[in-house]
Length: 67
Image (cartoon, rainbow, N blue to C red; front, side, top):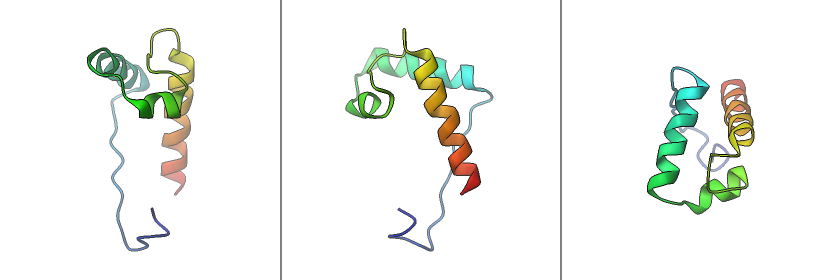
């Protein structure tokens, strides 16, 4: 997006820690399955895939902060 909108600003939403983020994702997945979860994390459900979800979250946070 930054190439298309070079003057744009981006907001990084933070949680207090990654476990709070993971629990939020777990609750969200119980309410509605979202195709984006499967595309990004390889599965719709957090349960049983915690390490994959956390690794993607932490990688994203590093990449955004480095941007």
